[in-house]
Length: 185
Image (tube, rainbow, N blue to C red; front, side, top):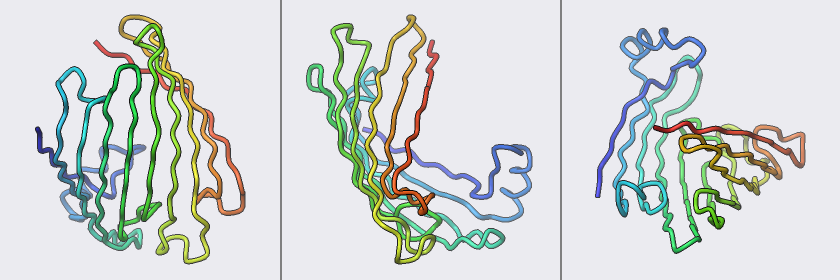
């Protein structure tokens, strides 16, 4: 069992990381979260995990973003070669892209156990404060294949299809192709 909490500057800019010192201490506009969870073991903490996260974001005056709060629940549990997951989220303000979302899916380990195929489906309702009441619900389909290339290196090609994308209301469908790498020692 674990409890984890955090505090971050909502005005942080990854392109100018050192400017964050000034805004963190001068503007006092923060994102706060606390998470309560359970993990099956340290080795399986990413696969066997159930947690509930509560968050709150202060109003961002200069960016004209209202304050907000929300919660997220996540469940994943490995059953042999299968790894089903469920995630549910709710947000009220705070600049969240989606104010409601449900994600379901699974991962399936290959014969090499270190490789994994995954498929996920998501429904989300765009935040009315950002997109107004005319925004259509967003649906996402994602698939990936995690390959263990070397002992310490994983490579993960990824394909997503967004239907009624909240960030691009002029498009009915948007394809996103990704490639991630993870180096762990």
